[in-house]
Each structure stands twice: as C-alpha cells, then as structure tokens.
Image (cartoon, rainbow over all chains, first blue to last red; front, side, top):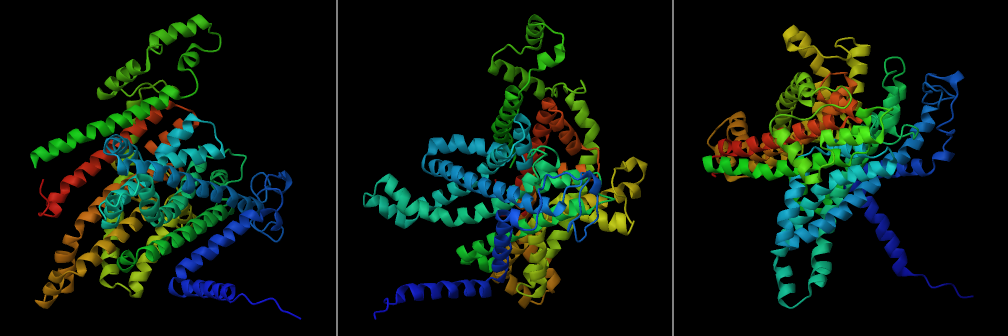
Length: 294
Length: 313
C-alpha cells in the first residue's frame, strides 16, 4: 500500500501561516482584536437571516415600543419592528457602503494621482480642482450631491466616493512625486525601461501600502458619513434598515425608548472602531519608522 | 511678508472660483424647474416661458454663472425657494448659534487635546500614553451624534444636570448660554480633540528626541519648562496645521450635532433645506463654510511665522 507523499512544503507553509497569525496577535493585539470584531461583523451581515432574526420590515403595531426582553432582544420600535433584526440587517448596508466607497475612491484616486504625478500640465489643473474640492467639508459635499439625486444606496456610495477622491489623489500624487526622485526609478528610466513598465514594476507596487491604510480609514469614515446622511434624512431610503435610518427614527422617541437609537449607535461605533484598529495596525506594520513615533 | 500675504490671498481666488463653479452647477443641474414652481399648478406653457425669461433662466450657462457670481460678490446669495426670503438673511439669523458652538468646541478641544498629547509623548510607552491613544482611537470611532445621545442619556436624562437640548443666546445670561453648549461641544469636539492629541504626541516625540532637549534637561531646567518652553514651541507648526485641516471634520459634525440638540444654527438650516430641496440655501451654506475653511487655513499658514521664527516668506 502506498501512501500519498506528504507535501512538506504545504505543511510547513500552513504552519508558517498559523505562526504568522499568532505572531500578529502577540505583537499587535489591537490589530488582532480589530480583525476579529470586523470578521464577526462581516459574518453577522452575511448570515443575518440565520441569526434568530425575523423580517426586519415586518410591522407588528400591537407589539410596538416593547423594552428589550427575551422575545425581542433589543426591543421593538414604534411600528413594532424587531430592533435586533434591524440592527443585524443594518450591518449589511454600513459595511457595503464602507467597502465600496473605499474601493472606488482608492481606485479612482490612484488613477488620477498617477497621471498628475507624471504630467506637470495635468498636475497644475487637476490639483487646483482637488484643492478646491478639499475646501468643501466632505460631509457637506456628500450632502450637496445627495440633494441632486434621489435617495438610494448606490447614490450614497457615489456621493461619499466623490467627496473622498481628492484626499486619495493627493496621497498618490505625493507618493509618485517622491518615487520619481528615487535612484531605483531613475536607474530604471536610465536603462531604457518603458514608461508603462516603470509604472507597473516600480511605481504601482509602492503605492499599495499607503493606499491600503488610507482605504481602511476611508471605509471607516464612509460608514460614519453614511450614518450622518441617513440620520439627517439625506442618505439611504428610509425603508432600508440602515443604522443611520434607525437612529433617525429613534430620535423623536429617545427619551422614552432610548434603546431604539442606542443599539444601532453602539454597533456602528464598534464596527468603525474595529476598522480603525486594523488601519492603525497596518500603518504601523507597513511603516516601521512611523510606528516608533506614533 | 506683506507680498507673501498678498500672494496667498490671490491664490485663494482660483480655489474659491472653482468652489463657486461647483456650487453653481449644483443649482444648474438640480432637478425641478423653479419657473414651474413659481408659476403654480394652473400655469400654461407660455406663462412658464415668460417667467423663465424674467428670471433669466433661458440664458446660456456661462452668462447665468457670471450673473450669479457677480451677485454673490455683492453679498446676494439668491432667494430661498421655500421661504421666499434672501438666503443671506436666513444665514445671518442662524449664524450666532453655530459660531458659538464651533468657537466653544475649538477652545475646549484644543485646551483638552494639547496637554493630553504632550503628556502622552512625555511618558511615551507608559500606561498614560496608552490611555491617551486609546482615547484618540475611540474619538475617531464614535460618531459625534452617537456620543451626543450617550451624553444626553447620562447627564440630562439620568443625572438631570444639564438641559437636554436647545440654545440660549449669550445675551440672556452667560451661565444658561454655557449650560446649553457643554454637551454639544463635548460631543462635537471629541473627534477633533482626538486628532489634535494624536498629532501633538507625534510632533512632540519628534522634538523630544532632539539634542537641544537633552541640553535643556542637562542645564537643570524643570520638566515643565522643557516641555512647554522648548518642546511644545518647536512642535507647534504641525499642531497648528492639523487644527486648521481638522475644522472640516468639525463642520461636518456641526450639521448632525445641531440636529441632535435642536440648535437653531446653520447646520439645522442645511438639514431643513435638504429635506425641502431648497437649493439656493444649500449653495449659500456650502459657499460660506468653504470660505470660512479657506480663510482659517490661510490665517494658520500666516501664523507659522509667529510660531516658528525660522519660517520666512
């Protein structure tokens, strides 16, 4: 009888991976905690229908404004909807908005930043526009854009993305400008490496680390902005159970049924905290020089 | 110095012009026809066309932009669609509460954050440092309006120490005025204070590793003297910069905070304008806030010469 040969490479790779995770948890406990909370939140959002929830939209006027109890863990709101179910489903909207805003704004910001970093005439024009957009506070810019369109989750993503792009562009442009002066880039150009190859092999890889960190922070701030927009009535449509919408609904009843507002508020804060912890950890890990100082 | 000030002032013109262009496009592309709204339900197509012409809405984009921008320069921000009052008048009525809220928040945050940052840097690596930075991370993560409700729940509903909401003008007494601003400025200021504390710490750590700090210690100066007289003074420029940039966060927070505390300020005006799609007000508010932000950052740029005599323009 022959046994399958043991793939020592794979085994040691798996072992190394496990060791790496343990090492991360030991050296950066806050990152590990952040990642764990974030993973829980994502799981919660994905598995929302299986977590003892009922239809988050189901009205039950006879059971409205019930204090948290065994039947309704987080109580019920003024229309008798189950607050627990709505909070769990609300994670979907928040994380969805945060994820796509981070992805789109870093993507577009990267593209614009690369072009402005390489072309002086474009740089002069585009950076003036970016500076101007940056002088409009991001929340206000997103509000203005939302005022132009009808309320929908994709419009919220678009509006917040636009308000975040100038900062990413600035970051990428700065990285590109400093890389262009680096000896290894000059050397690559000197030996006749083509423009696109230089870009792909020497510039792009060096923008990934700062972009990853920036993307994490953008995700966190996008989740807060989404909540602010929904809270003031300019965000996701009111029928969607987003954390901001739930807080907007709980506003008028705050003094008699504070739990309607408090549960989504706590979940939002914890989710944003988790993402910020991951971002701080990545920043420290990717820039050891900064880590000592921060 | 004077020529620098003039150059910087001129440099803000294109920035504000682009902001104005953006703000104008907002109204230009806004859905809904103001002429149709003014004409009412029974208007014919000719009526609407006539009002269009009267309002100059049939002129080309650039002509309308120029007319609008000229008006803004003379202080005419247009007429609110909903209330039919001049936007500038509406903003003026609401200016005081917002100014009071932002100024107290600025003062409270700076006064709290800088000592925290200095202390954290001075005792880097100890529990004081860790506690300070934990405070900073929390500050970045708890949205101002969430903190606002927690504060109301604890200090107004449970303890009954402070009013739940509302605003009292300073003319009606200093203590009631302050009483109504304590919770809003704490809620609004947390994220701002977190930002300032963090930068203060980073900037201080950089300075504290310099040789002249060791010299200052060696010649027998007290820690207090070294920290404030030598270190903080040299760490001031990045701190001032972040105080200016962070105001953008503050403005975003004002809108939500005023909603929570029912403060009749510009934030509240903005929220009402959005719900009613009153575009001239939205335009006016964006212009005002952006101008305030640009001017404040200009002033901070100029303050570098005072903070750091090595900076010359």
